[in-house]
Image (cartoon, rainbow, N blue to C red; front, side, top):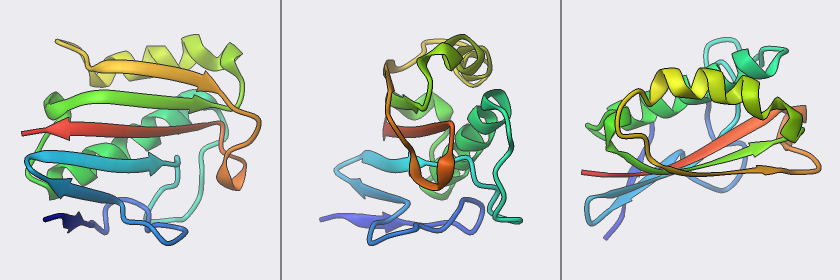
Amino acid sequence: MKKIIQTQNAPKAIGPYSQATETNGMLFISGQLPINPKTGEMPKDVKAQTKQSLENTKHILEAAGMTMENVVKVTVLLHNIEDFAAMNEIYAEYFTENPPARAAYEVANLPKGALVEIESIAAK
């Protein structure tokens, strides 16, 4: 049985999906765009966008009773793979010890013109 996880501290879904679903101790977090949930705005540069996407992720984890330490797998989608180092610099601030497995890809476009989108899987 799945449980829908939702928080006002992360942006609302922009389509027919949930912020996250939990089942059997696993939390599947939908891709987080770098949208500030209070203003609806996105920062302009990839570092600030990475920070906002990870803050959104952190708030969803908190709503499920978890922390960033529970994250076991991350997928990072970048509009430009040349932003990898800048993204990685901010990403490293959120996963300081025992970082999760990760993949990063360049994609042609992201929703709302974002430079980064981050999805995660966590486990209790």
